[in-house]
Length: 128
Image 1 (tube, rainbow, N blue to C red):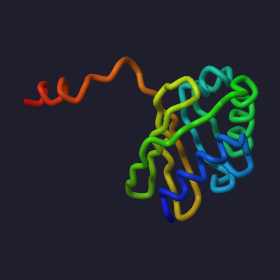
Image 2: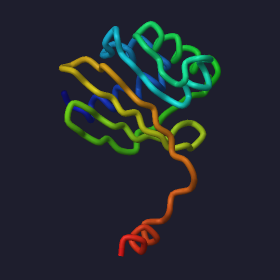
Image 3: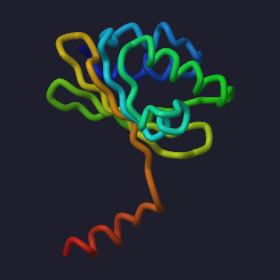
């Protein structure tokens, strides 16, 4: 799978609010975890189980955030996974981590930046 092309398609699908395009590679039994899910789906504890539940969660997200828009900043390749680093319509940086089995996404995680990142000079000073 070409992960850069996948990330471009993922971003275009989110920006078009095209749920069917977003969900096409997800397994029926997918498990997706996100702090946003905890807020939007009462009682979920942030864990969404199954493709129909993921569709309902994302549909609600698009309903409450009608101006939702993403811009991909970077794409990270792993073993059977990809991390898409992006910024949303509010300028908040986040990551979508997707785990594959073959060509199907079997699990995913939405992660969000907390706090203010240190400058790279400060990071290097801490390492030295």
